[in-house]
Image 1 (cartoon, rainbow, N blue to C red):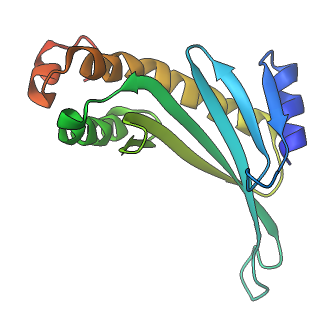
Image 2 (cartoon, rainbow, N blue to C red; image 1 turned 135 degrees about the vertical axis):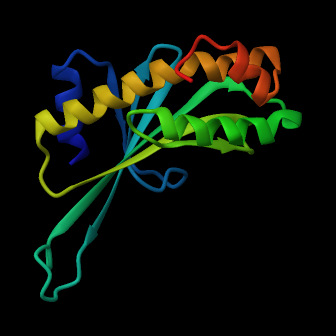
Length: 161
């Protein structure tokens, strides 16, 4: 599946790199440069147990899209960062924002279940993710660089809120 995704991305003009599974890396993954950030795409595929459901016996792929924003959140601002991530999920066209304390940043994670890769659907999901992160990044950057409280950020931002 990931080889098909890489082919699609490259044909769409993206610079994508497929990293194979190693002893250190538990699963193959795609690295995709998007502006100042890197998107990581992983495939977790599962065989659905056989029973009477419409998808029984099918292999379902779960394409996981990850973006870690380069803007670091001060540990004293974690509660504001968590509130911001929650708000971004409410206003974003595609939710997936979370606060990653180990990374000191807001991250984006979206899981796309697919049994057969449909280029139009993948294109729509990818562009929706890119649009969402482009829309929400300025407010993440504002929290990071100016260390404002959540309330001050809401009052002064020209972003999507």
